[in-house]
Length: 126
Image (cartoon, rainbow, N blue to C red; front, side, top):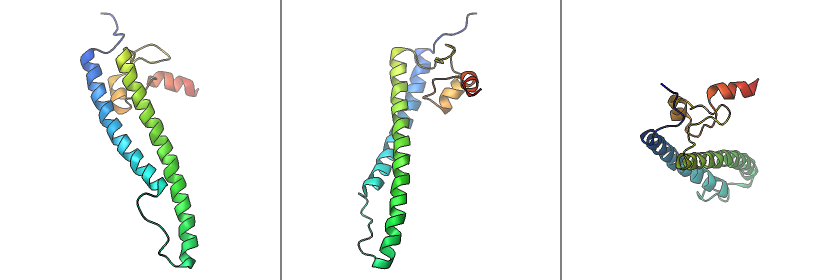
């Protein structure tokens, strides 16, 4: 029996469902982070005394910076998931870009945007 070179349409549909679910959650989390950076949640230091205002503004700046970094990471995750959907459409999803072999289903279920098998990823580290 020859080795599979691509996943079946049924298997790809399973992965598409997983990716779409993760994409929906990721977009919601991104919007929440984005609104916290843009300060659209309405919390501000306007009503606090001047002594605490300086402290709160400093903490607020750090919090916004962290939320900004998290939003950037979340946006990259969204882009990776969208790229995975494109690979499903063009029939290259689940194929390791280094070895050309199928990435195991277990890995794709855990990391649906993966483009490298574990073996290829470990080889890159060395």
